[in-house]
Length: 192
Image (cartoon, rainbow, N blue to C red; front, side):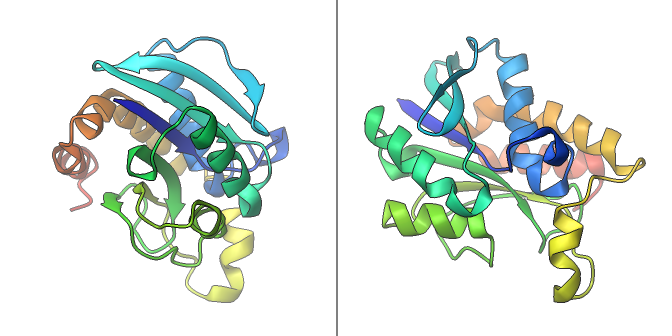
């Protein structure tokens, strides 16, 4: 089975450690831990292909800025002939406590502009999401500044470790055992 694994974030060094870029961070760790080939540029994105647990995986990081992520996702999915059911999107989630991870297929976008763009251009919400909790700043007027700020000094190493554990647990997700990974992560970070 071929899978399109999409990390959401904004391109450029000034955004690289932002909370909004946790999807990019997770995919970069997956590329390292699973020895993917060199990054290439196409589909207005950086991408690389590899094999994980017997699955052919193309990892994609759109370089369009978050609000236009769907353009890259749809172009890559069409090129590689990947059905929406085999697309997995890793993204930041305000509605989950920091370090809490949930996996689901379909549903709304929860106000996440990257998901909104993907769903709109794919024409279906039926793709898998790995929702990575970053917490909420407490008021909707503070959301933009919060997601576009870097992780705190205390948070950064924990989120780096979470990315390593996500990368190591990717075979579980690809084999349809994502709930086991969610449980393992909850135990590791005691976020259950």
